[in-house]
Image (cartoon, rainbow, N blue to C red):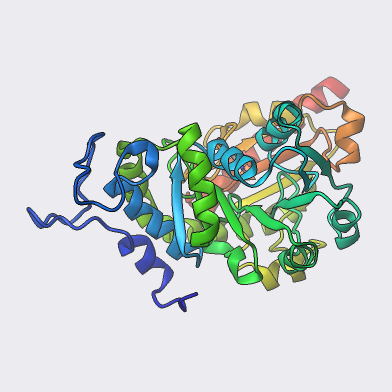
Length: 391
Ligand SMILES: *Cc1c(COP(=O)(O)O)cnc(C)c1O
């Protein structure tokens, strides 16, 4: 592995540019061709082969950001997740999966794996024993996501790498919540790094894409599978994503800073019961987060006091948008009980630590004083309403 040479903002801005030899334009030209000359070339270029000029160039940026040898773009985060799992798992194989992973990944595993004859186990918790106790003779892959959604739990990546090495497993991580700005899992030995580029890489809530970084050898296995299922990203979106990624590090760092400020402010608020943010000293995994992360992300969650109606709170927000997705430059909030975890019973949610008053907060780049003002007016409106009901 080559040592990291360039700073993150330089990688974001410059690595993997397509140079405009013809007109010397400042940005990468966009090659929309779906047909390329096949004579005298080693690799035939074709959009579904993930090797058009723009795809190849942006793959280099993804690889550089994740300290890996190779990178590849996909049509969505789930196209990347599903291709990685199915490329490395065969009939009769088994995979150990962290229990609180992204809902789409959970659905993909429980709805699709049976017909391929692939078995799986979700862990009961996040300790080494929780993972190791699920490993079987035919286990081939160990799959994690940290920080986890929505409680921002941190999984020890060195521990996962240790288990993968001991039991000869391919280790995979969904690094979407952290982004490569805050966490580079390769440095802790993780093999396959997956992103929903719809989130921090895109950053403006207007792109749906996925990305994977890995060694050349692992990427060859992935490519051999992915060219057959065809989940590539359109070159126009590749080009837009390249533009977004130039500002990724400055966006994410601003979001880290805002989230930390908001977490502290919320923790001190009399109508807020609890705040979950790995950057707070009282977060149970704060020390681990400090060890393996460069920043604590723009994601946090908090619980309103039980007497406060969380859906009324979301309705009263004026600046912050109640919204399903995350990681855009604009702040958004959602209630996991009403959205991502709505299919679970209140008891099943409680068992996972998700109360009905929990709110997930994707902190944007707005001024924190404006965010605080919006939250304050919404909390006051709900408190007033509830007093009326109680009176
Ligand atoms: C959104 C998300 C995905 C899925 O990505 P899509 O681009 O929506 O397919 C996967 N993992 C995590 C952690 C996500 O937040």
